[in-house]
Length: 161
Image 1 (cartoon, one colour):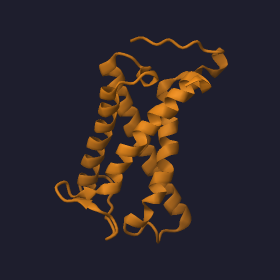
Image 2 (spheres, rainbow, N blue to C red):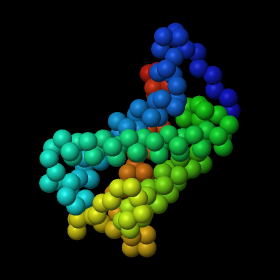
Image 3 (cartoon, rainbow, N blue to C red):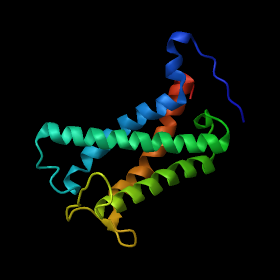
Image 4 (tube, rainbow, N blue to C red):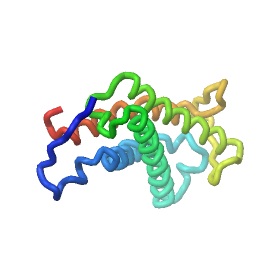
């Protein structure tokens, strides 16, 4: 299915870019999620305020990059960069699955010292027994991607969605 957008003017063309919308809104959705996870990671709640803000912002940037990568893979498989305008269940599932897979891999590596940064969970973090990674980073990729698809779809179509 091919979807074409009528851009109101060249001046606002960047707001009609699905890639930029995914990056921007993924950051905005993930930033507060990262703050909500603060009590679940050792030492973060005790950090100086600005240090904690910078850490959460860095994590949200990483989440936005993962979202953009997942978006790009789905767009490539769909052969349609506007797939979020009329996403199929398969496309949404693939989008989510990529985010979950990347997150599980990163969490697993970080917890074992195999990443450029390290962290540890507090006792409050529920850990998935088979994978040995925290539940909330996985929930993040189950809850936020469908919201991201809805927000980007609405942005790309205006208030008509």
